[in-house]
Image 1 (cartoon, rainbow, N blue to C red):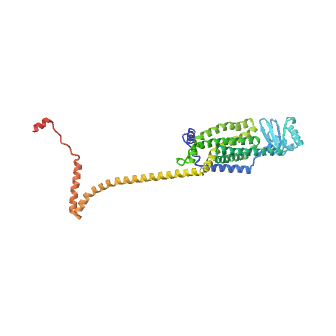
Image 2: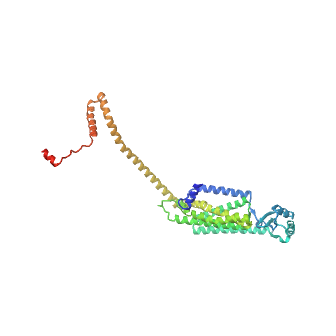
Image 3: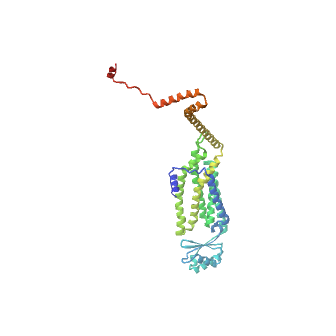
Length: 402
């Protein structure tokens, strides 16, 4: 725990940089797992569309002192079947299928069993055609948003950045929708507003990273010492702290609305909006850093100039390694040559006396006689040491000597 805290602290201070671009398989695996779970939720659970999309009748009234079962039973006794009861603050919000005016009046009269006069019951009838129109408008707004995003990124940057950003946006949408499916939260028009908001937030984070990458990689040429991937990772590391700080500052108030506002104050509409914002901001920050940037780098590395740059750097590194290996080989050989004469002299010195003694009995007597004086002479020199100069006497001593 302390080690992780120290690493995070060093990243925030800019002392170390994380190798995010160099690990695309890790990030793609995490994203693939999240996408698989989200798609499974959409297929198995499905989205819980609100009455604004599927149509129906909405009854709102205040009935303190009653439970959800009491309210549901009273409404069902009035002829309604698909009853969904929610508590928003001190009021009850009951959603049913589309009812006729007669059935609406019956439900309102039955509410008197809960101690609520019919005049205090607020009703709203939403037709299925209106819900379908809202859905169509939402899809149209999403399509227009995507087209504008692609056009802007293609003009301001390039088409590869537009493709990477588009993939990240689709990634964020699917995961957020999957979390809505598994959680069972109701999808309302406020939810759509939250979806569009998180797309803009994710795009903002991606544009900040792409702009830094564009600035850092602009000077790259055939003689550069780093590849496009390494330059992009440096740019991402320089903006990582900014992205994390921006996301944290934005997520904290949204989390307060989601967990505190809905739990204590029962803000139903804010719950639909805040969940989309909370999930989308977290996923959008992750995708802009760990999905869009590695995908952009992989697309850019396929360009001929950056592929040639990578090959040039690889050749220079291989040549440097060969030169270093040759230097180490020559150094080792030189060290071996320096050690060989000293070993040979010791061997000859040690072998001479033995040879002299053994040679007297079995070999040439003349050769033994020649080697013996040399050995003795060397020993005498070693024993006597350096020759000392005679001491010179004083002038009076020399006169006396004369």
